[in-house]
Structures are given as structure tokens and as C-alpha cells.
Image 1 (tube, helix red, strand yellow):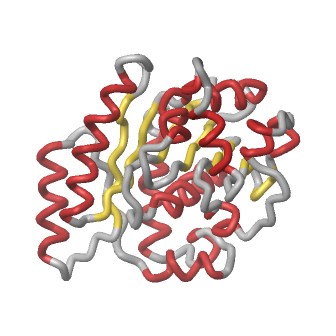
Image 2 (cartoon, helix red, strand yellow; image 1 turned 90 degrees about the vertical axis):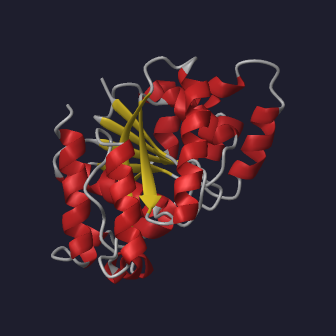
Image 3 (cartoon, helix red, strand yellow; image 1 turned 180 degrees about the vertical axis):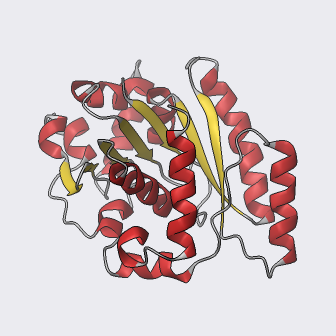
Length: 248
């Protein structure tokens, strides 16, 4: 049975797509078959992986394309179902449904059931219809949290909204919090990390240190493991991957 992990927080600038891509590729390098689904109309994941995606999630939902025909191979053991601008129309069409709107993504991905060890869903930085769909589809939530005060507020709001979905998706667990942009030189950064340790001791993963190599890698269409395998970013994300694997 596939493990379905939603990477989500209703805030931008927390390294959500970088985290989704890094975790997906890390799991693939560990020998797991991984499907990365981009539900954001910015379509960042294809860019980060450096691959042109002719089709994507919008084709599956709106054009009734078979999901197996819409995915593209991104790396060994890693496949991508791309996002992009067309998803803006998808969100509107979901919003017009009289019933079953929250199951649209689940229905679209149903033909791929159990073909992958992991399905990682990358969401937009907002509480939109596709984010809600992703939370109804998944059983685990991973939240990247940049070590800033505003992000803490977003985390609290997201946690409350998540409870409303968990009332219907009983198996959904908020399993992981991944602190990002940790900078030892910034006092506030460490103070916020201490708060997270206090309030989320079970979910908290080791922090991802601030690493310029992560942002540089995007410009080359490479993951951090390919661009700078010995960097702190690669080592930190690998710890997160191992944490996820240890829960199998």
C-alpha cells in the first residue's frame, strides 16, 4: 500500500516545493518508487527537476486523460504529475461541483493505486480546493516551517483548519514538521526552533540549515543531491528522508 504524504502550509516562502522535491528524490534514491504530484498552479516542481512536462494534473481532471499517460519520469524511481497555470481552471471547476468536490483528486489518482511506494503531494501556499483535496487523499501531512514569527502564526491557523479535515478523513495524521532556513547566527531562528520543540516534540524533524546551494540548484534543474551532494542542505534533507523511512 502506498504511503501518501501531503506537503502543506498555507503560506509561501517556507521552501515547500524544494522540500517536496528533495524528499521525493531522496526516497527514490533509497530505492522507493515515488510519484510527486504538483497541485500548485505555479508548477514549480517541473522547473526544480529541470524537466519539460507536456501534460499534468489538469489534463487528468479536466480532459479525462489517464493518469498513467500524464505522468513523466523525472529520475530513476521518481515520476512527476506536473502542476501549472491550467490548475486555476481546475480549482474553479471543483468549486462548482454540487457534491463530492473534496474527492476529485482521489478519483483522478485512483487508477494509480498501489503502483508507488510513496505519493508525495506538493500543495499551493493557500487553503484552496486542491489543498483540501490533497488532505482528503493523503494519510500523512508534512509541514515545512521557516523559522520566522509569521510562519508560526500560519502554522497555528493551518493546524486548526487541518482538524476540520481530520473530522472526515479519520486516518490523516500531522506526522512531520520540518524547520527550514535555520541560521545559527540569527538568535530569533533558534528561539522559534525551541518553541517548536516544546509544542511539537513528536512531529519535529531535524532542521534544514540555511544553504545557498539549495536555491542555486534550482537554476540548474538539479536536486540538492545532484548539485551539491556534500552540502549541509543535502545532508539535512537526507535526515528527513531517513526519518520518514523509519516510520514504515
